[in-house]
Length: 141
Image (cartoon, rainbow, N blue to C red; front, side):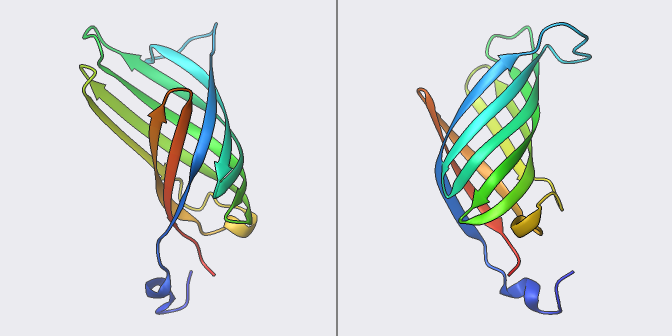
């Protein structure tokens, strides 16, 4: 808990950079309600430097280009030189290949070491072979 008035003194900062992702289908077993499951491995450059691993579940539909996904990934590395880890929660939907909505948030209280107290939301842009990110965040101290 922050001392009275200190919450108002925190400002949102932005971290930017690129990352590569390798998504590997997970075969065997039961996917439950999901259409498919992927294992994720990412490498980050820029203001975030490090790696993340995660799991993604997809839900396809009978309409071409319509689908949804959820994912959880754990980042380990540094954010603007501050070392630690944190967890990201993803929710994405696409309707008929045109309307794409994506929300990625930092799981509350998941930050460790120098990233303890980290909060924020990430946006990503997908380009051929590369992805870029913007992480709007607040961090105590």
